[in-house]
Image (cartoon, one colour):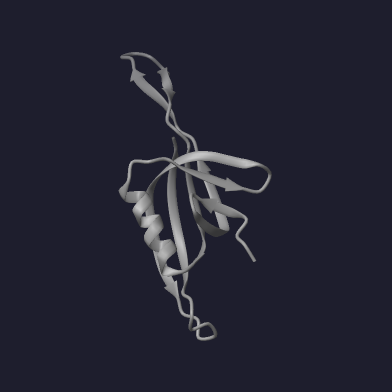
Length: 115
């Protein structure tokens, strides 16, 4: 069965997806004032963290290659999701499986920033 989610050419079986969006604020504390003055300067790009499963060491190598490169990759998924991201972190852990000696399964943690 094919993965519903893909980062570039790698199928990811997603277990968890977290999104974060931070605004940029300057806080100015004025002497003898009773409140903080806030100045909005914009916002940062969205940051997504994905946890899931990937089959095959070659797919782990590909993900690590995406982190080595400055190229954006398209992240696709259900409900017509298609966004370009920079992969800034790829972490993987092999999951032991004695039933399939021809392939390897990995738990992955990916961190991406909207390009």
